[in-house]
Length: 300
Image 1 (cartoon, helix red, strand yellow):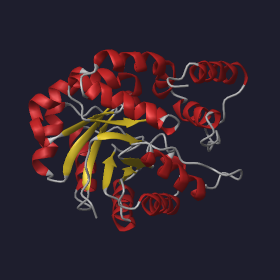
Image 2 (cartoon, rainbow, N blue to C red; image 1 turned 135 degrees about the horizontal axis):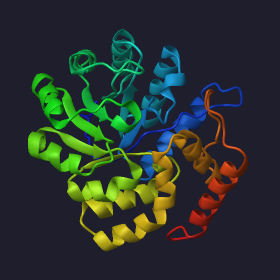
Image 3 (cartoon, rainbow, N blue to C red; image 1 turned 45 degrees about the vertical axis):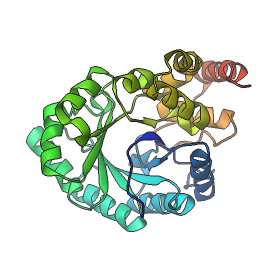
Image 4 (cartoon, one colour; image 1 turned 180 degrees about the vertical axis):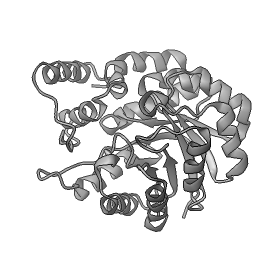
């Protein structure tokens, strides 16, 4: 198995559902292959965008197995590890290793907001559960837990398999703060779609992206332009992309991104309750934004 590389554009993939809301494994495989063929370095499955909280442990394992089978060793498969309990989180991580995943993305526990001692114990248990390369997920906006640079450094010192962080604080200063404190020991990937150019300019080496599920080529081009310092070209593409990228940063980001996938012919908008598909004015306005973007798509 190839060693995990935390660089470039790695989509946080959606989980496709059939009409009965069972997982559509055939389309999942097709989607993974399409993303890789368009330049993505791999996929992160079972994250928030992947509606991981609505999937049973057995379904999670099956999703990972499908991704690994679809991609093989052409790219990387990362498992999002999130749970209400530490025991279950450890079990999911071990299932990911057995399924052939290349890495894990470790989230703080759902619902219970512990202090640093408790949060560290949870994360440490997952990091120690396998030998897989790990990425810590910092998203204080969504999960309230905020892994500050000093805490990240503490985890780095104790866990040799922790190699990366998905930084979704929406504060670009955090990228430079982490670089200053961790140096080359930590790969920093931006996890907020409408901050990608700024984060790449500050030194982020990768992007765990959302709208890439529908626009992989544009996402890869945008990150590469930003990472190589082609400021004007990056800004021109960013300006076009921003109305779509902003859909990644609101509560209904799953419904929005799945709708964009449907509109470009690569997926459908089905979601599992408690989420419901968009309707009424919200649906009409979103479709208008998507139509405008498609009408002005670069290279159209």
